[in-house]
Length: 115
Image (cartoon, rainbow, N blue to C red; front, side, top):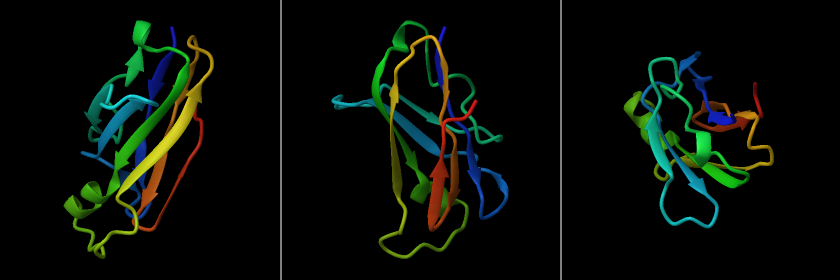
């Protein structure tokens, strides 16, 4: 069975981004399918989406970076350069593992399809 996972690393501190709120949306949906907070390792405690709920389509993960950075003591300008980071991606194979990590700092981020 396929599944969706993520991992967030704070590249400014060199540590996992613990306590970061992430929302998962299916494109076209008005409310999140799921909302999670990262654990001490910067990961969800389990797959964000799996089983029958894991279907082909277009999705968006919203990483609430501004809230995380402020809570971590980062002095951000108003408005912050990065606040909510949306990452849109497609799931073509509902039997595969899709891993969408985020590497985060106050002024930049990157992502890729991980394993």
